[in-house]
Amino acid sequence: MTPGSSGDAQLNADFAWAAFDPIAYVHHNYLVMQAEDEEILRIVREHFGDHFQGRAGGPVSGVDVGAGANLYPALTMLPWCDEITLFERSPANVEYLVSQAKGSDANWDQFWHVLCEDGAYYALDMDQREKFRRVVSVEQGCIFDLDRYEARWSMGTMFFVAESMTASQQEFALGVERFLGVLAPGAPFVAAFMEHSKGYQVGEQFFPACDVGETEVRASLDPFAEDLKVECLRSSATVREGYSGMIVAYGRRRN
Image 1 (cartoon, helix red, strand yellow):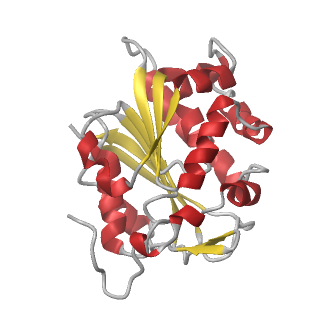
Image 2 (spheres, rainbow, N blue to C red):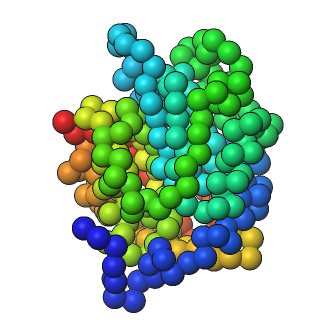
């Protein structure tokens, strides 16, 4: 499958990703933790904690695909990784991530505190900022080019990316395929999606979205995942207009 025309749907290449404003995005979404994000953190910490509990072996490598201006997916992998790659397209987001790797802002502490309700996070043998600084690296690139990293990483996250970079169902499915393709067989993963999103505003710039629900999410993941679970989260207090909820999918890369 390759990116390409999808009728009148707006494609990933049609939008000015260099104009993405990470500061505006963080201020709107992550300055104060939303209820849905707190619930997602609880789901992720349990999934990763259950996967690694009692397993022998040393640290593993992790990847957050389409990291954007969001640190909390990487934080969920911190206890088990000696390297975490934040893979991101937008130059402005890359610059933000590099700056945060040197010392993350205080607003991210609230997300870490939720994770620390689980022992694996609480028992981290150093300050989370120091561990983050040591293990995180940032790589700029397009999600569609990830096929060159087949089975490279041992755990992974992809939050609000595949459905929030295009209006094309074809490109959405390809984005999910590329994410799962970089994970080694058996690797645990979590992916999150905006349900039935109509697109979103960041600062002065509008960005596309692909209208997906539980059916589309399951269909995109099923060929590549095992032990797949999909949960739909809805709240009366939405982060923004134009979506109906959040979807969290988690499991392991199919052998």
